[in-house]
Image (cartoon, rainbow, N blue to C red; front, side, top):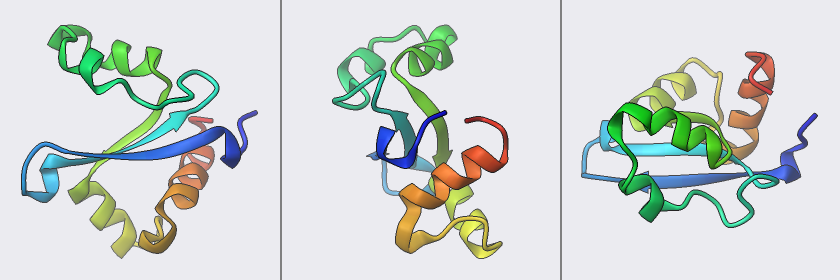
Length: 94
């Protein structure tokens, strides 16, 4: 099973709105350097999810989802990495 130290949290923004910001929990055993944005940008939109999975994406949430989960107390905005890791474990993703 993955441990917190085996993961990283990456943040990507494609605009100014909350739904344009994405938080990705990444398996560093698969992608030690994180998500390859260049490769991702060239991915076929029909295979976007599989490319993310190949790059070690464990969980991806947009800014609106993160804000909602923080308001519910399911994520901690001050420690988003650890709380997303715990959420992924609780949901059976890890």
